[in-house]
Length: 101
Image (spheres, rainbow, N blue to C red):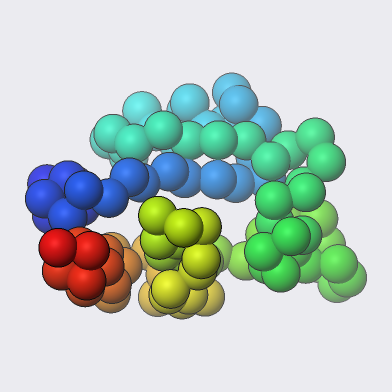
């Protein structure tokens, strides 16, 4: 997290889980950033194109990392199991920080 702080980036986790499940996950995994729930309507997952709409994962979101710049423009996307690794997102945030200096 300190690398994200150094690049003046903010980190949020958003999932289609309900709030009690998110709290349990955060406690179990030592999550220190805010978790936001997209449980009720799943509008965020749908808007970002990561909501599964059919099959056994229907209604769930694919794991993804999005880096959004200060103007609200998406500058980096990573989807799938590799999105759990913050290395690429950290690099993208650092590049954004250098661009804005």
